[in-house]
Image (cartoon, rainbow, N blue to C red; front, side):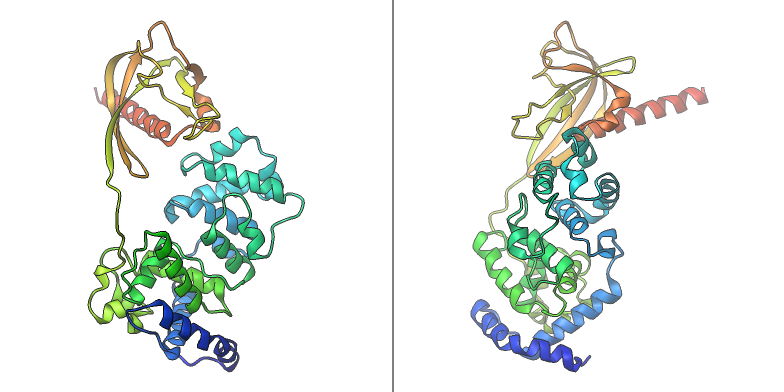
Amino acid sequence: MPLSGSKKSSRQGSLTSIDAEIRQRTSQGVLSKSEIEELQTALLTWFDRNKRDLPWRRTKDPYSIWISEIMLQQTRVSAVVPFYERFLARFPDCRALAEAPEDDLLAHWAGLGYYHRARNLQKAAKELRESGFPADYTAIRALPGIGEYTSAAIASIAFELPHASVDGNVLRVLSRLFADATDIGSGPGRKHFTKLAEALLARDRPGAFNQGMMELGATICLPKNPQCLVCPGASICRARRSGRQNAFPVKLGRMKMVEERRRLFWIQQEQRLLMWQRPQESRLMPGFWELPEEAQLPEAKASRPVGTFRHGITFHNYRFELYRADAGNLIGPCKWVPIDALEQMPVSTVVRKAQRLIAGKAAHHAAKTIKI
């Protein structure tokens, strides 16, 4: 599809430097000026027609976009949507977020994991409640908890500033486009691919181009079995031309998953549950409430097993065994907590999974009783 005169002229001035940048940065082949234009036009057309309808794509409000980008770190899109909508309903702007009690904030974040993200959001909100959200990349980048990718995403999507945002999906797309074997897991490798992304960026629509690259990686250029036949970049993709699309990207030094078994106690007295709270100085999830283990209740006696469930954190894969138990005479750091208060408390995802297991067993027992 030919470019309009205005679009062509706006891009023409940067194409010489773009081509020079790419010639310097890739050893596996060069995209010509016409291929760069073809990619920009094809990607933007494809994105306009096929983008998923996500709530943060219906706004240019930088606060809302910021919240979505932080939530999307290390979390699947489908999982984020209900959290995003509930979070914005409770904290609609920087002032509401800045003034929220921490327990309330963490309760609304519970289930997303990586809770330092929520605390950094509040730190930044406290800086912004009077001045409002900054409209330039450098100021956005200086906020607590915001790195290069997130600042580029917010700057381009909310303010149409020409900064390329490079996440895992974009790294995969770029690696295949150039058939580039640079390690995407290394710091130098990420810088290398970020420079390539900056060189390819459509300056007249940077927000849509960045989202298009991310969308392409999330829905078409998949980690396994990429859908090359429907990819808007297929005609210029160096990996596809050589039939090596499954050989990219290259990531060296992958860490192996650590398997670990843990035993949890569900100790309930009427409508109270015995729990303990992580101290505020804890390295992991400070302030969150947990079910006790033997470390908290060394005298606890397990009475009967409830079931098991799995939970993954970074490179750890935990298999939790849940038991009903008697606490013994000493409850140590534990406290009795009203069960109906758990929904408003900052409790870990492990606790939520244990609650679902208990509820499922109760429902199964009730169904059996009715049949009898």
